[in-house]
Image (cartoon, rainbow, N blue to C red; front, top):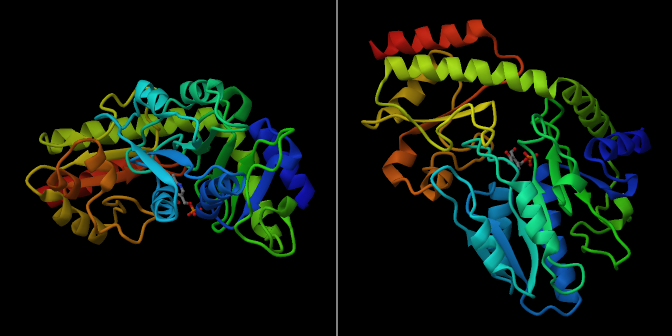
Length: 345
Ligand code: PLP
C-alpha cells in the first residue's frame, strides 16, 4: 500500500517514485526542506548559506527561517506588492553564489494570491550557483487542489503538499525532492531507522498516507470543475456582501476573476473596525470565518500577510478571511448573506 501510494503521488506531480517522502504534516515537510537543505549546504563547506523566502510564507516556513537565521544562515525576506506577488527582478538580483534555497509558496493561505512559480523556476534553475544550488522549494499546500503541480514544468526542486487541504486526513504531508547524480541534497532532520530513503525516520502512518492518496486521486478528477464552481460562489458572495456593506474592500488580488488568485479564498477589509465585532457575531450566527490564518494558534495577532501588502496594522486587524469549498452550496451563500444582512440591521 505504501508503494502504491508513493507511485500515485509521484504520478500526480510528474515525479519519480523515489522522490516522494511522506511526513506527518506539511509543516514537517517545510521544515525538512529548509533545515535539510541548509544543513547539507553547511556540511558541504558553504559557510553562510543564503536562503530567500517571501514575507508572506506560511509560518512553518517563516518561523523555521527565523530559527535558521540564529544559526548562521542568511535569510532574505522578499517583499511582495499590494496584491501579494513577489518581484521577479528583485529575486534575480538577490541570487548569489551562496544562495542555496529559494522558497516561495505556490499560493497564499490567507489572501489566495498565486505566485508566478513557473517564472521563478526559470530564474532559479538557470542561475549557476555552487554545485546543485540554488534549489527552489514551493509550498503547494493551498495550490494543489486547484492548480497544475507538475514539478518538471514548474522547474521546482522541492514541493510540499498536505492531506487536509485536499479533503484528506489531517496529520500527513509530502515532500517531493528532485534527485540527481549529485550527492544527497538534504540532511534528515528526524533520524533513526532510516525510513523514507533515510530522510524521515519513523514507521510510516499508512492509514493516513492511503487517505491522502485517495484524496489526491479524487481531487485530480475534479480540479477544474471545483475551481469553476467555487469561484462562482465566491464572486456571488462578495458581490452581495459588498452591496450590504459598500465600504468593504478586498485584500490581495482585486480582480476575483484573475488567474493570480485561488478560487476559494476571499479576504475582506471591513472599515470602521467592524471586523472584530462581526467575527464574534459570525460565530454566534453559524458563519465560520477567520481573522488571519485558520491554521495558526496566533490568529489573534493582526495578520502579517495583510501588513506585508503595505496595509496598516489597523487594516490587518479589520480584515476577515472567508473560505469556500467543494461542499459549499449556493444555498449556503444566500443563507450566509441573509444572516449577515439581519445582523447589520
Ligand atoms: N502551508 C500552508 C500554505 C498552509 O496553509 C498550511 C496550513 O495548514 C500549512 C503549510 C501547514 O500544513 P499542516 O497543517 O499539514 O502542517
